[in-house]
Image (tube, rainbow over all chains, first blue to last red; front, side, top):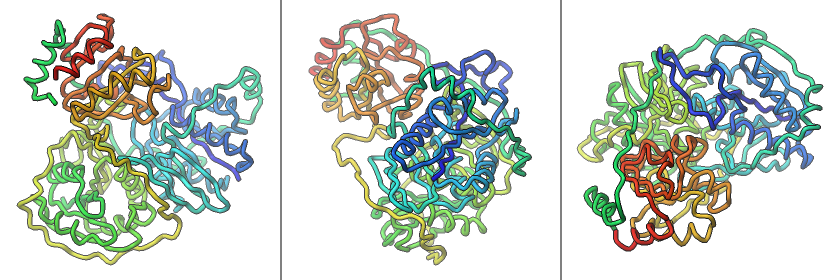
Length: 249
Length: 309
């Protein structure tokens, strides 16, 4: 079984996003970029399925600028077998991404597509579900456990208040949540090896997908700023402040 | 504009998150509801009472029993032929279903809206709330999810919706529900709790977390949280994590105990109404966002607080 793993290059999760002064977006010039953490979990899960003998090949895909190659090389260094860069400098919305991934899925015929549940820049949480709709496949979103059993996959999902398990017919779409696994670090020899693994470059037009945005960003602004409050001297003063707010046992 | 609001329920009662979605939808136009499930008469009756509701579409079918998006999304897409906007609460169920609906309709969804600025214009958080985007849709129909903490809850009485059965849809035959483990704890859920008590790395061990953090949470009927550092150090399970890659919370009161206030953590809790920080380092960044800060040794201060509150 082949596994398709989409990965996105995003602002590193440890960097504080700064809104540009002209309100057009978040400043991404000269800041550290990394693989979206949820996608990293997706790559790790695919590798584990390969190590278990369930998967035979892992194809990493990224839609983004030329620099997204670095993100794909990271996936290859972790253990993906080959990569496809769908190169564009435009910001591509989840719906158009799902259309590109659908076209790739048609060509590659994977048994599973494992995506991050959301990217930590746009926080849309849509692409996996949209890809499932377009392919007509079942979806196991926010996964904390994935078990392939014959022609089905059973996915344990993190839902409000607990966990839920669903059984999906393959091929299927899985989106990852935090508890699914802890991604490995690529070793130096694997980083070197990744440099010679195949990486194809395509464009959205190669897949016949129009990436013109449907949603226009009118402006991006700073959230309301929280100002520091007061320092209290001791527990008694804190208790008094809390009681004034109606907080007590 | 005719809106169709997804009613989230547990089979017997309407869940609160639905009520915020109704408020958001009412800013767009006429509010119709969809109650899908198996044996949902009681839920439909309750839903019809929600203030401002017009029609309540009821799809009662075993295939809709467990909110499987493979079965629900085609049903919603069909109902959308006579509606202009699909509105769902941004819960795990809403987030699972709405994008599948959007793609079936060839619409770009707008996720987790915070406000309605115009018929097609909304604000929504990006970068875990570190920036707020104002966005405008150009699609013919809208698909929205609604952040529950951003809208008032619609009143649960006073409405007189008319209940109408829908016969569309069925089992797509590609997915099935196996089981659920829903935590039946006395403790409120992290994402809906009024008070959260979170502990950080300064606790030093899982035992100290239990000894210091849990009693305060018990006393206040609060949910338990933790910083990523505390989770990575193994003091508490992963699902306690508040932060950019964990849970985004906005309680009335948030206690950050022994948490320095890394960007990662602040992104997950800075929308809390009141933040209380207890830390021995007076220069800790957490104090820059705290309403009440107490500089002190958490191992003595927190038990004292627990005793006196």
